[in-house]
Amino acid sequence: MNLLNNWKWMPVLRLTSQANEPETIEPWQITEYIDTNPIVDILAPRADFKGAMYQFLIGLLQTTFAPEDEDEWREYWHNPPGGETLKAAFVHVLPAFELDVFMQDFNLQEGEPKDIAALLIEAPGGKTLRENLDHFVKGGEVQKIAPHWAAIALFTLQINAPSGGVGHRVGLRGGGPLTTLVLPNESVAPASLWQKLWLNVLTREEFAEMKSGNSKLKAPADIFPWMAKTRTSEAKTGVETYPEDCHPLQMYWAMPRRIRLDLAHSGVGHCDLSGEHHENLVTGYITKNYGVNYVGAWEHPLTPYSIDLKTGSLSIKGQPGGVCYRHWLGLVLDADDQGKAKRHSAKVVSTYFRGDRQRLIIKAKGEADSLPRLWAFGYDMDNMKARCWYEATLPIFPVDKARRGDIQAAVQTLLDAASEALGTLRIAVKQAWFSRPKDAKGDVSFLDQDFWQNTESAFYQQLQEITQESPENDANQLTRREHWRASLRRQALAIFDYWALSGDNEDGDLKRLVQARTGLEYWLNNGKQMKKLAA
Image 1 (cartoon, helix red, strand yellow):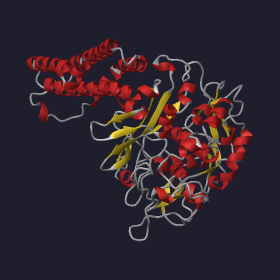
Image 2 (cartoon, rainbow, N blue to C red):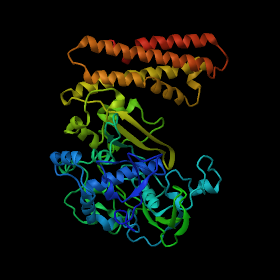
Image 3 (cartoon, rainbow, N blue to C red):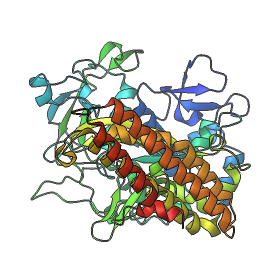
Image 4 (cartoon, helix red, strand yellow):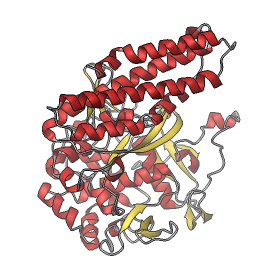
């Protein structure tokens, strides 16, 4: 079975599909009936699979069908290629997508046997199961998977690979990287799947600007590492894999884990993930440590990075609390990370602003819900443990190239003030609750969630005004910043009042509560960042 040819396995949703009823297609059929009943989305049994399948198709297009330049990119945006054109492009890579070789060690014959559920990133490990500690994610619920979902599970693990114990390597982007994709404006009608994918495909000229990889390498294994003997990374006999050792396209197909699916002992029944009936269900695999160890200055086109003068490039990871407007600047444009590092957006996002795409996608200025959006998703990992899967969409406002620096500075001022207000709120609530707040332990992240959620609409209103205002109109800018200051102050006090009065006040001391609120009001007016808003 081949994932690209003669096998309809990919479930998709068309514009007129009823009640989320999918049909299955081969990947080359993604533009089928695009003028009359286009495919608008992928349907997958898990959120991480959906994100992986988008990356699978984007990587496939980037590898086999990348446009030469912006003119060709624009032509295919307006006139998508027919299925036969894509099928002909995919022919050249068919051997790499055979089910029994895709993303698997070329010559792994022996290894540690694993149940198929262990491919799922959140699955409890062996020690957790032995000690009966699988309280939140139970073991034994996934025992057999349809072969195509086994392949996607393997792909999902390889591109997100967290730490997996001694010698079990993390992914090329590090464990649990954040992925960001640009999505078209869908305020009038759903965008086609083709548009969602093509908007994240770089031209050959743009891809050549990537600093990661050696484009002089032409062998299939330089792109698809499973097409040759694995570059293992044992301490004494192995090697590390630097960008100069691979073609740049290997970033889409990196294979840090040594795994081989057990396809010889398949069974008949229903897939435990999708419920579909299949005659070749996969129940296990073997694995071995010391796979490909990606080191050096890799920068994946779909991931934002933090640049530190001492440590170099580090991919942005999923973090507790998820993705919200406080991340907007670092994911969409560039931002200072509290003076420690410089964050920059993913290559596909910066290309959207730099090239002709912004003009094509944004038909007219509008509200946040009528703009193109950034889809950010990824795991929040604590070493080997998946704490949560996060995803969010953020509006992408039009950014005039000539004003980019001014817009970045203005948004950074808003975010700095918000962070200061939240920090002051946390301190005040603990002062209201406890006689010795510095000694009080416990998680107060619920304050963060309330604060970011309650100030979100005001932030996007500010962002819309920033992108539209004249830089010479100082009076309007001051009025706008005063509105933001008032919004932060109002929400911080409202959240304080709610939690200080209804929360864990250890002894009911109302005097301490009043003093804490008075202190909060003072710093909301006189904090360093808050005062900048009035300057």
